[in-house]
Image 1 (cartoon, rainbow, N blue to C red):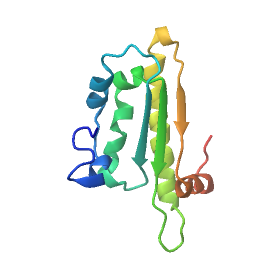
Image 2: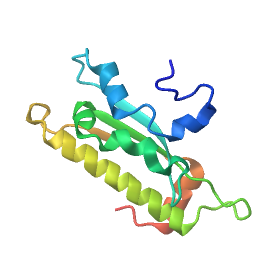
Image 3: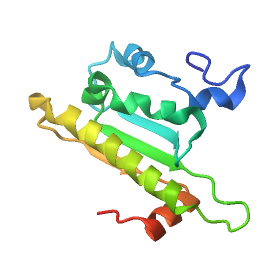
Amino acid sequence: MPVDGSFDDIGADGLWQNRPSAQNILSAIKDTDDDDIILHAIIESGSKPTGKGLDALPFFDHKLMSRVSTACVEPIVFADEVSGKVTEEDSQAVTTTIRKIRQSFVRARACDKEKDGNSLFVVTPDRPCYEGMISHTNLT
């Protein structure tokens, strides 16, 4: 079921906004005691992402991320139409975004002594994004 207009009469454009928001997700999971909450999102990435990065906002909400046991980020970047490659600028931007999301997640999980900071962070980039990251950035 679409949440907050995420995919309806405005089409897929709503997906690149803050939809669903962290508050929408928290509302959906509020009545569960499950410790295995997995948050997965496709993140439009690069130096000038569609939606200006609003689709990544839930990953920066401390309250939400403290409930999430596994965070999965699927960054996508559009390759240059002529060369078929992702620019260095886009590659650097996506790597920076992934690092910031991971830091947010680790900080939120570390604050929960009961869960002892246990968590899993997964990044599944599309092929152009992956190739750009490998070509242009130091991933360590």
